[in-house]
Image (tube, each protein chain N blue to C red):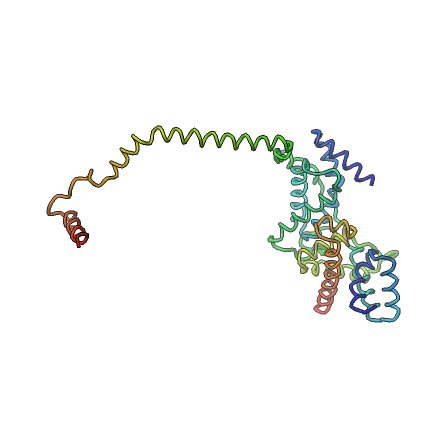
Length: 150
Length: 191
């Protein structure tokens, strides 16, 4: 076994996650390779530091605070509804939107001709009085009129 | 197996509207979740907040939980993701040396018999070095090494919590250990 492969197996070896075949190969390699043997020792030492670490416990009153929090928290209500009912709800919403669009288009068709005429008339420039002579407005209109004629 | 059977029954009770079932789940897992958050985040205050958030999210989503999955794997996933969301908060100084917050520092387990003051000091230094070095790891590597070394999960369970392949878990653990060894060496050389 090459050192590069042996080093990839060191962590699983420490964690007892190696197959017996790989474990035997690694142990054989360690017998002849001091560098890899030392790496295994270092990794075991690191593992031991973790073993000696403190186990933290939830602070006093933790559970009571969780229960107080969840009382005000909203439950995910939507996922509680079964999927077929959710699909049916979606279909009803789409149907309502479609009905709205169709009836809306009929209403618009009924009102459009007479309203359209009024709106067009209100937008037409002819409804404005001509600018009184001698004003800045009449001068501007005269200039733009000349330019348009050219 | 017994643990998972109990969990399934409690979850069923919760889905039937019995809130006390959820309370029992909190009681059962609060130390594990808090311990995980504390090692991930370092600060006792952040760990408390993150662990509270974890249970609140679990409560809100428990109806989506599928009984065929493992509850604690699902809960750990929420806890790890919640801790990852806390990453933008100011990071901790040391997760084991709790000088700032004045927590109990007597959690060192003696190797054998009554520890000498030198051994106690050495052990405390090691924990401090480890805490500082862990804080310098990327969150991905930190999560994987804490789930392995602190929570004692198998590679398969870690893969389930982090939603990655076992091969990814294996390579991340190896990298995390290599980086930790280097960081701890640097820490000792600085001292």
